[in-house]
Length: 446
Image (cartoon, rainbow, N blue to C red; front, side):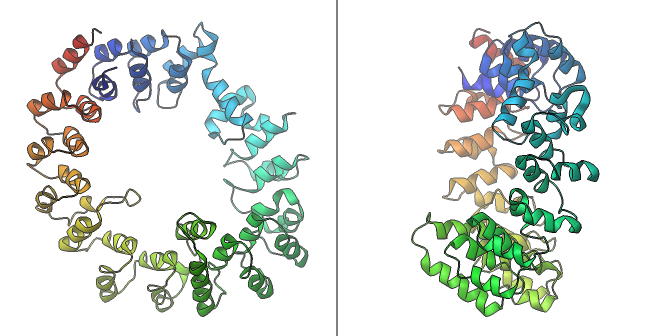
């Protein structure tokens, strides 16, 4: 199949007749069904006429109109009518979480409340782990369910912390202990059981604020690097001890993918929850912490002094630099230097090149970079499309093909590019004239 046709199927400006003709090709039909906006009735009817259950599954989403969902419910083919329900049933069976909306639709007339008392514990477990806005009384009922799987689901995510008066009972229950061990008020018995538990349970209790000092120190010597890394997040840990424990973990690391490296990577994505509320002077002391999550949490502080911010713009931790770069008063030259040296990062939004202070002329300099990833960013700048459309790297030509103001003549060239990704990007561009869309269909015999 021509990749340009897949791009055309995703083109938000494609008229209904184009989509109707594209629906003859299954990959294009699936792409059309995935659209984020509601589809015209004629296109929906054409898609459902294929009798394809995958297409029906994608169409049966909140993005589409009630009329579309009704058409699916009234379709003569059972595999089309039941596509969404079967998908939800399969997700529940393997233990994957579904959305509350999907589960409510699956439940039928009784809705989520009806599943609370269902005879099948698998369905009670599903509602316990899905219904994030359930009334307190319903959650209490599920926390007392006879099936441990149901109690476990009701105790943890996506629910808020359990009421204090339930802590003792939840800690005493093996099914729910691990879900509350990180915050519940610990009894002496609960501490003993957690310390004797599996790695995940020890890791959870390692961050509990009510953990006694003796138990904390024992976990600091735990055989699991993951458990020891969690101890680093504690507020009551002496700073010197924190640094020594971290240094010991670093010394144990033997490669990028051993258990120590994995533990440290997970730690890097965590946040010491108590740190943002500490006085400024105490937070500033963590800016040069060897533990990345501490210095990054501090860099997020809105009350950093100007001289500290200036220093952080040259910090050795690039993520710290990215964090402070998003401050509204960051100078343009600082922004350009950061992008030129390290590019953008998908985690940080909005992009640095979208910062109001990012200098427009910097895009011209990015366009001449030896790094193709930086030349891609140049596509956001003015009057650079021609150079980028002729770039040697397909990645850069694709970026040019997506530009909203690309001349039609350049789109014509990119539609026949040797790279499938470039051709697809050109066909998906809303700036593509309708006559070009029809020409693609005619060439494919559709």
